[in-house]
Amino acid sequence: MTKYIFVTGGVVSGLGKGITAASLGRLLKARGLKVAAQKLDPYINVDPGTMSPYQHGEVYVTEDGAETDLDLGHYERFIDEDLNQYSNLTTGKVYWNVLNKERRGEYLGSTVQVIPHITNEIKEFVYRVGKKTDADVVITEIGGTIGDIESQPFLEAVRQISLEVGQENSLFIHVTLVPYLSGSEEHKSKPTQHSVKELRGMGINPGIIVLRSDRPLEESVFRKISLFCNVREDCVIENITLPNLYEAPLMLEKSGFSDVVCRELHIEAPEPDLTDWTAMVERIHNRSEEVHIGLVGKYVKLHDAYLSVAEAMNHAGYEENAFVKIHWIDSEGITRETVNDVLHGLDGIIVPGGFGSRGIEGMILSAKYARENRIPYFGICLGMQIAVIEFARHVLGLTDAHSGEFDEQCAHRVIDFMPGQSGEIDKGGTLRLGSYPCCIKAGTKMEECYGSEQIHERHRHRYEFNNDYLDEFTKAGLKPVGINPDTNLVEVVELENHPWFIGVQYHPEYKSTVQNPHPLFVSFVKAATDYCQTHNSK
Image (cartoon, rainbow, N blue to C red; front, side, top):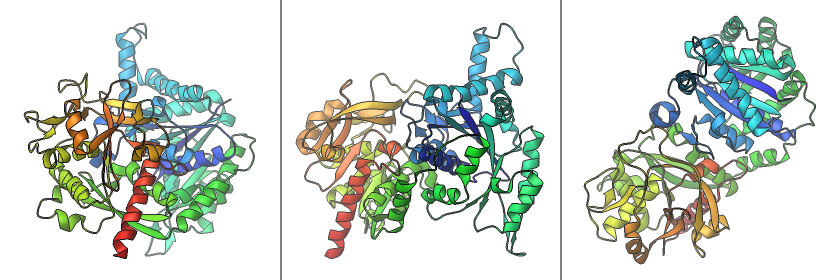
């Protein structure tokens, strides 16, 4: 029977429940268990697709096209398994589904209530991910903080699941902050005690308590929390802030985390084989090179807005023995007068995805700088479109060239709506989402990166390269080297006679994991490292 683990958080938000859940998934997978992960988010948005990157961070896209919370990226990067549409559920989606069922008469005229209709919808969702993946263990993170009114239906639903499957098949893990008071030079356990009390008031008894702290905890703290929160002493697990998040599984395992979980759930499984993971962490510690990459975007004030891109570059750096130093550059600050000063000294430039016209001209100047100075350039989604616009203006001589997204009236829309799209449709869930095929032309740098002529990558966009200009770009040297075989849409452009200049319409960052870094990012970081070595040797 499938085992269910529920991860809750207390005291404050942003504790790292996602990293704890992802680390546990990694440890259980290392024991030979099949693991599935999901997150239940209490906000009323149907999905995060239309939410501000400044508030929510990036939108993560699964293989089957679900727009999800960024924590799902952590799950995939740690567990190295593809998640799906059943991996993220919001309050908005729950009510949307329930109300649609009511409109269709599926409740046979019953009064629709939070209990049982809302909770049953949540329960069905949790059970479904286990059935779909045939997982041995389903790890479900409950977003928000204990005590929030928005989280109560989710907590009630998982409480009911625990009753239905039995205590031997369910486990609650509570992640909580243990603050340190510098005045008295001691950690305080009282916030954790109050948080657990709040959780118990909802009928949930945590079996394991994970203590988040910036520094090692005293033994007295473990004993006190064990005593007053009514859990075994070895069920109080320390989770200290680490310099690298991929060290977390090893740190947690030193406390016997997965042993305790298996014992509480009556799982018989061999000891975790962490040989590869340990070797990877050692490789991270032993890097000797350093490379400076400029990430030019419009949401750089919140680094989580580009979380997967940053992590993908880190993964590539681990592979290439390099510390990737990301320079977070606000594209609005790049002008003709400042571009040389802002971008000077970089070994590579990456322009990630985004929407809206703000900061676009700064991105175009960045692509021009990379092209003219032969600096490695990596354009992702919007970044590819930026490279196309820049090339059209300054090489093809189409000075007013632009995207239909930013200037509907321009004469040369080298980027425009893809077939079937228009400005009249709703924004939420209507983008080109999920995995699509791409055929790569032989003899290109792209083929060298992938080692294959056909790939599948994840998308999240609405605008495309305008094929009316295909011949002009090809003749001038910005060549379409990746084509969707079903629609003939341009997926990849590559600049000839340049060390490394590639734009992709898709989002390769979503498929990079710490143990399987994406080949495009590896190649880009290698090119930047080569540029750095050549530049520094002069």
